[in-house]
Amino acid sequence: MSTATVNATRITHLVGHTPWEGQAERTSEVFNPATGEVTGILDLASKELVDEVVARADVAAKEWGQTSLTKRVQVLFAFRELLNNNKERIAELITAEHGKVTSDALGEVTRGLEVAEFACGIPHLLKGGFSENVSTKVDIYSMLQPLGVVGVISPFNFPAMVPMWFVPIAVACGNAVIIKPSEKDPSAVNAVAELWKEAGLPDGVMNVVHGDKEAVDALLDNRTVKAISFVGSTPIAKYVYERGTANGKRVQALGGAKNHMLVLPDADLDLAADAAVNAGFGSAGERCMAISALVAVDSIADELVAKIKERMATLKTGDGSTGCDMGPIVTGQARDRITGYIEAGVQAGAELVVDGREAEFHGGENGFFVGPTLFDKVRTEASIYTDEIFGPVLSVVRVASYDEGLELINSSAYGNGTAIFTNDGGAARRFQNEVEVGMVGINVPIPVPMAYFSFGGWKDSLFGDSHAHGMEGVHFYTRTKAVTARWLDPSHGGLNLGFPQNA
Ligand code: NAD
Image (cartoon, rainbow, N blue to C red; front, side):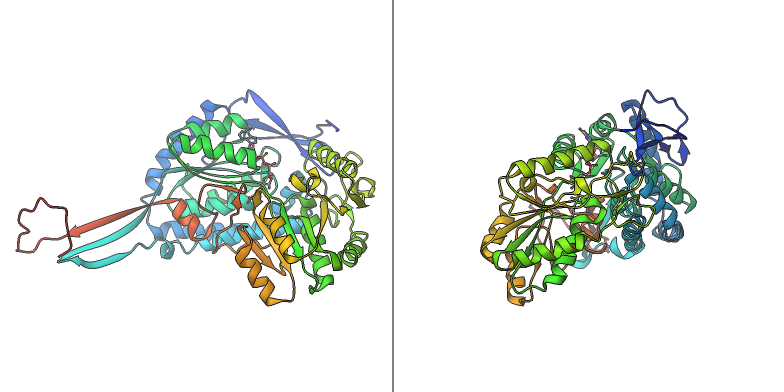
């Protein structure tokens, strides 16, 4: 790995709208994965700094939570416009630190934008209920009130979209937010935070602390932080959920995945092959909704594998800013982990149909590249099948029937996304009912719900019971209060020590 630090810029926290001016005790390097160069030096927050930011956010939350819906919505609309106008610039920042191709980065910003658009409807979404005369001259109504300070901890693979799954809704609901982005690609979050400032969000409502475990633990332990939205790998998601809830917080912790795509004999095999390639190798497989296990019914497996191989030969891997199909892996360490899995797959006896280690790369010679890789006849005990590789490695597992395929999917520890490819409506309908996975695609390989639905998996892909965005997001960031009111008229209720009953 190159450690050249030519023109590396300092990247720091945003305490409210102000870049932090302190001296960091610890820093980490940010790479351009296409060249292997260090392009940024990131300040890592200490526990003391996190606690200081939380205290300031708490003050801001109290005022913002009392700000009228009309004024909050004006900020949200302004933010939406600014984000739309700046999406290309943010996409370039993502490509420069994450590596994904620029069109894909633009797609991610657009999906984040959709959550901001959903949050613009907050006056409608925050309406409570009202029942008149539940008892004689007694009314009940419910209100959704903000929590106060909430934390967002995000992964490297969607540096703009994942934070935007949460921040616009948390802010719209009247909370102050502290976001702790991935230390691998931190610049997109800073750029988006600048837009919140420009949109007129009051100082202190949106804060960015960069860091690693120390900053995460400080957020989890600080009792002023009322809720945590986490997205990342399963072991850390479980840890965040357990530590956060032990400290009395609401936690939604979205974890890792191993997404299966089941192809039945009656499927359109060209459509299925396109989908497998797009969903297996898009963003170099570094998507929590990537397809990494292709479950093919025996009778069509040879033909499907041949069609996938044919398509893979046309893919160009290289610098994501230069019009390639697939960019580099986020770090040299992650690249080495992926190539280690490819070797383990060979050792486990799987048939290596396309070896991404031998691909030609169009980028810097020190870039962190692995080409698209295809294994066939993968056995289910092999680590390439059991583990989330998070790289461009697609494993084909052959099954005899729909039932065998379904059983395989349902025995996975993960349950984030899945897809079925078939032209049989009855089979698709059975699948949507029987599969134990949170997000299901029917002839759609990456079934990411729109912002007004909620995103989330089952089993080890989610700890907690709230999915991201949609109405589940609104509920996650608010507490419901029910008010029972009686306005006295000239009559008097009289004494009654019994439990109130309707009359
Ligand atoms: P990660 O778990 O390494 O890191 C996620 C966040 O946790 C980062 O902000 C990181 O700084 C922090 N963190 C890392 N180690 C920690 C520790 N020991 N203690 C406390 N905090 C720690 O994940 P990643 O590599 O950045 O992202 C990839 C993973 O995220 C994959 O497993 C992917 O499936 C998952 N993911 C899931 C979803 C989903 O919706 N379920 C979406 C995107 C990514």
